Image (tube, rainbow, N blue to C red; front, side):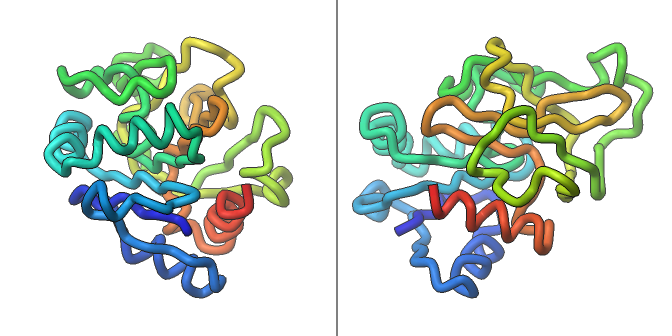
Length: 204
């Protein structure tokens, strides 16, 4: 069963709809008890980094998520701000992130090669996987996804960068460290490409 973590942010219904159409069992988790029995986790998010971290902490699910992801190695995918909070910190706020991925979140405006680009980065863009990953099965040749963001993750370790996108310069738009995945784009808004990626995650 895939649990969509509902801590008050993200388009929960859109993720559930993708899996319901594919006859893949999915449930919405709003408490730590709801997470029990989940074989995979989706951590959505939109908006401000600190707001997301505050809501997640207040949800009462933070401890259970740490135990499942870091202890039990349950696969998790963070989406948009859900990916950004996987990092240690963000230039957008002052609160610490989850720290599940070694990296920090930076603003396009503070990065020289991208500071003149309009923000937010909004709309469809090409995604280029950097290595073989089941998350991108059947998506290597023409993968395009929908983006809406002004910040991106900078990974400490090159091997954690799973895919890049170009917006004035290349930036990391997907990450993976062991059972922990993140995508900066919105698969739930990316039609057939996003549906394929979410089904790939279900099949990991």
